[in-house]
Image 1 (cartoon, rainbow, N blue to C red):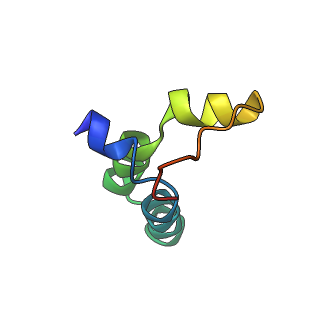
Image 2: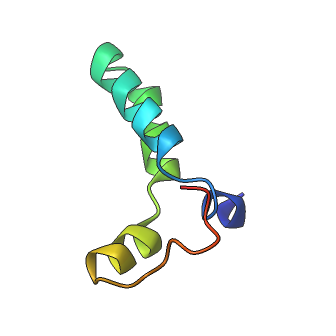
Amino acid sequence: MDDLLDLEIGGMLEAWADLYGITGDEKHLELIRRYDRRRFFDALMEGKGVLTNKHA
């Protein structure tokens, strides 16, 4: 699952964040945490080109 989530980013994270914002339900916050890819987002913040071959 961890490797799969490295390829599927963006849309689902945004959808869970929107849902959590609407409901405030902690189970949606857990989904956000599962989709939050620190190794991916940290690399982007460092200016590394990590979007090649990603579904983003």
